Structures are given as structure tokens and as C-alpha cells.
Length: 250
Image (cartoon, rainbow, N blue to C red):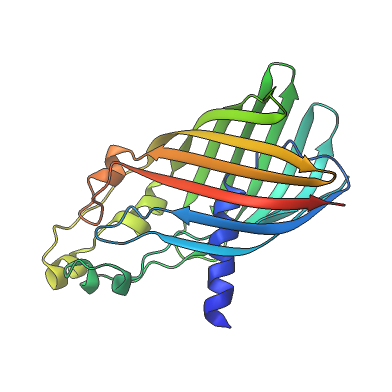
């Protein structure tokens, strides 16, 4: 049961990365999804997992993947939201085949909470959020600022987007830093990163193939900043996410 719950959190977290605020009020969707997310850590493999999905948006409340919250203000073009979401970012020494990384401390996933802003217009959508770790695992903060534009091509809704993610120094230090004690134990060089900005590109394809049914494919590639890439824990210059889901809207 514990493994199933962790798997569910993992997949929905991937799907929630691609929510850009185009949902219609009072909408409930149920479906199934398959997702994959590459790990930035050395010799740690990606996982492909299938799971159910529940999305809901109303005048005052919303829930999508592992995130939910309250609409503090909402009109045709703008939203100000209070949000809380599970952050699946974690490091388990046993998941890596690198012997040095096996001697490091575990980095836990956490719950993030903060505010978000969305503006919709004919020329596209701007979204921004600012969140803080509320469980005291990383004590860090993150921000996301992006732009998306949706158009149709042969009944397929296509939404390309771009943006960047900001991680505070404490956030990077917890997930990518190496303390002097860990350095002595593992043989890796001690590392103390600063805050970082990581740009990303994403693409979503939505295809309504029957009444109330829709299939979606979403992909994102994030270029890791030098503060992350220079960590002895990391062996990649970027990470990719991919999600495929089928939803029925009531």
C-alpha cells in the first residue's frame, strides 16, 4: 500500500507540472495516466508508471494532480490563488548505482505552499508562482514564471510554452549540496550551491477523440543551472518529463 501511494504521488506530480490554468470553472475530469521523469542524480534510472488522475476546478476551489488551493480572485482574464502542493523531489541513496552517492544522506520530498498568478488573453497566458517548504525539510523556496500559447491544428489543441524556475540557496543546498561529513564519508567533494535559475521548454497536445473524452501528451525539458550541474551528485545537464493521459470530463 505504501509503494502504491508513493507511485501515485510520483505520477500526479509529473502531470501537475503541465497545468497552465486553462481549466473551465466547475469542471471535473477523471482518467488514467502514464508518466516518466528523469532524475538529475548520478546513475539513477527513470521510472514509467501508470495511475488514475482526478482534476477539479470550481469558482472557489481547485485540485490538479498533487496541487490544490483557493481562488482568492478570479475573473475572465486573471486569477490570484493560494496553493499547496506535494513536491516529489527527493534523493534516496539506494536508488543510485554510484557507490559514492550510496553513502550520502537521504533528501526527503516535502509540501510546498504559496501564491500564484495567472493572466489569460488572446495573445497567450502568463503564469507565476512562489512557494515555500512548509514541512521544514529543505527550508527552501521556489518560483516559476512562464508563458504559454494555445492554438488548434486539425482538431488538436497545441500549447507550447517556456519559462524558468528559481530555487533558493537553501533549496539547492538541501537537494544538491554535500556537507563536510558527507564528503568525508563518501569521498565526494563538499559542495555549497547558491540559488539558481533554470529555463525550460514545454509542449502539450490535447486531442478530443469522442464526446467528453480527451487524450493528452505533455512534455517538458529543463536546462539545469550551473549551481545544480556542478554538484558532485549530478551527472546531467538537463532533465525531461513526459506524461500521457486520457480524461473524461463530466
